[in-house]
Length: 80
Image (tube, rainbow, N blue to C red):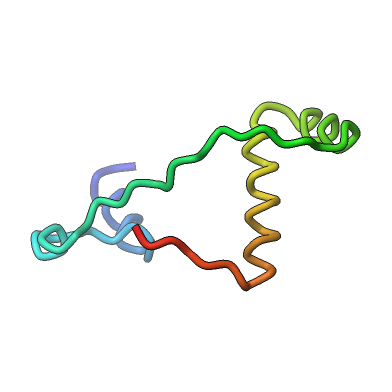
């Protein structure tokens, strides 16, 4: 694949459009929200299941909890 093919492929992708100087003049650097270390009591069967899914089980538990929170629709987002 040559440079022209790579450029054409990138231009066809709506999520990979090039930026210009004007874009960067108003761009803001946003850092992800920091995670906190907590202690939580979980059912041992459930924890075994998450751990059995492999590396990253704590991130998956966090994702499940976030999905539940978002589904409830009554949480307040923090403004940074």
